[in-house]
Length: 81
Image (tube, rainbow, N blue to C red; front, side, top):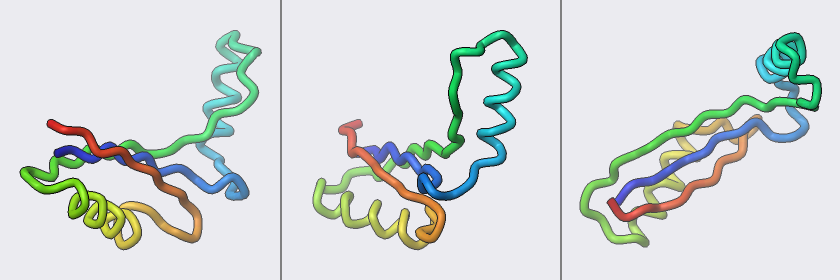
């Protein structure tokens, strides 16, 4: 079982890195780009584990280590490996 975890800034949190990428893309001629938000993608190999335990473990990983709940949201999907 694998967990594909996406961590993103909450909408109300400023994203200076995303703003810099937006400006750079426009300078490269991609004027249609309106905005960019930067996040993280984390791929975790959970080994042989049942789906309920995997879901509980990944929730715990994200809340305690992988995402800052004040500034970030997370979502994940479990995939059979």
